[in-house]
Length: 111
Length: 115
Image (cartoon, rainbow over all chains, first blue to last red; front, top):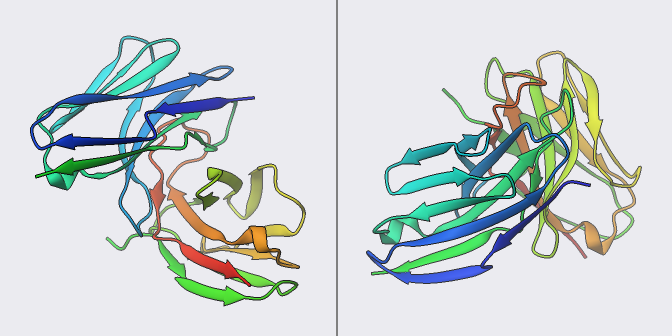
């Protein structure tokens, strides 16, 4: 059974203090690993797709990396508007959009 | 371009009742998935529809059902509601089926409270 574990559950940083969020996964036949951002009261918003080990994607202050067992979301010099829950998900199997999500990391950036 | 629209946004039901939630995907999107989000279990896959056919189903009891119409709009139904069904129900659309882009477009959800 596909599983995703995210750590830490919650992270509080000062503005400008860089850090990383971890996503460990087990999946048979990884078709893709995905990062989403969710703000309170909203649905998740897509950030990145990673397909193979060694791949990296960047968007503004966020950078996602992938190994064979885990993914990291690096946040460089974060701002208060980066505060959100960050969700990691994997997709396996054939012919389906089904995603298996982790529990998320709740990130708070203090000004 | 309008996003994914879910109705109603909030609703309160009592145990034993049934509920129907509606989802209008982004125009041109033919795949619609439903997820349940709770504080304890996180986001869990319910089912996926493409071209009016259920293509995949998660590990939920038969009380949870859904359908998709020819215009790609989707509904999900929960019968004989239980307290544990209280959750945020999220609908997500995608233009494709079977392509691992992972880019699902989520609505804001329907928050169901069962008393």
